[in-house]
Image (cartoon, rainbow, N blue to C red; front, top):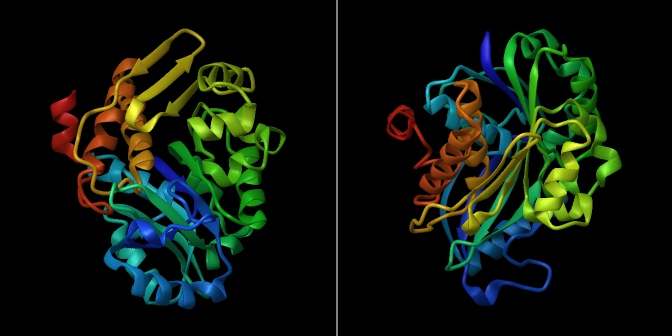
Length: 317
């Protein structure tokens, strides 16, 4: 039995450092922009001339979370789709310690171009490719149900969104579900996400995503989301730390002070730290502390270089 199975997009992350003069009205720090596949080559030429490639790594929100959990000693697996290409092979190797036997292959691997400014703020240009083709028939439901927890993160397309919805409608009641909708899903609106919220044990969101879903201040919005089914709602507040609420508790945790090199994936590592605490049956306050410390550690290097490991977990606990 796996501790956690992840289900979400899989991308090759290409990380570029670009000068501040590169930023335009439609490309600003913090945005996520969906692009057509045929635009990839022209985008890479443009950012290659304007900036420098700092590195490449495996990416995708749930994938980052699974790698971090694996490094901390948990038994993890993944359900998703890549291309039958060199980028896909790279992604499989990058999922260190994660069981990749349920990852299907399509034509072309998804790519996420991460643009960093001089402060480490990022904008994401996403080319989904095979991610948008994951059908329910390609999902091994027995594999998912034989786990302690299913963690969901977003896809860009409608087909995998409906695939995920069918998955959560068919998992047994005893399986815990965690859900990070991301901005793509938050923009679908509350009604579209109700089936996910009803079935989730814990939901991870940013301040902006809570405002998109509820139209309310993040604290009020978190409490409102509890009414739709989750037992826990965790709001990631970046430099302000985090806010976690359940029916019994309300926890505000300050951020760890650290040098910021790359913010890409920090929220995913936050999720991993929090889930590690849940899997170890730790109090909610310690889950939030683990999440904040794990995210802070990931900020200090590009990509997955500084993800938390067993030693980190032992130090914090």
